[in-house]
Image 1 (cartoon, rainbow, N blue to C red):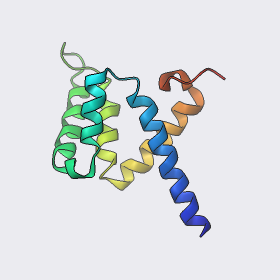
Image 2: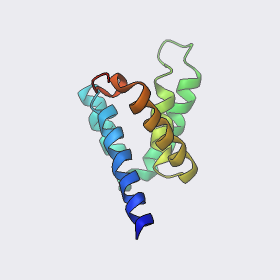
Image 3: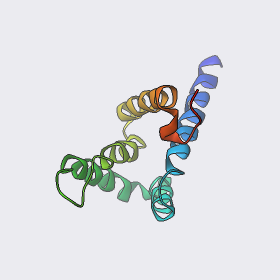
Image 4: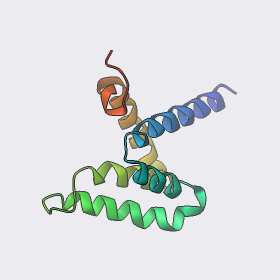
Length: 107
């Protein structure tokens, strides 16, 4: 029972943190990310996540940027459990150490 509660709490924290980050995106990008995160969009989410990671690696080119890496990992983590654990830890770190990145006040 306790383990189920902890899992549910982790999922709630993850979704809350992701939503805080998504709110920092431009409106059109927010809509796209919300659409990609729907369970039915898995067939698009996986290639999009891979594209964003590749684009992040090509950050030296004018159209691409390093901002694409975390978004790609975040999209892939919805379907790849090891990445989900990694992104959960990264989101918790960002919230604790860099709350302003999520639009939260400095502590």
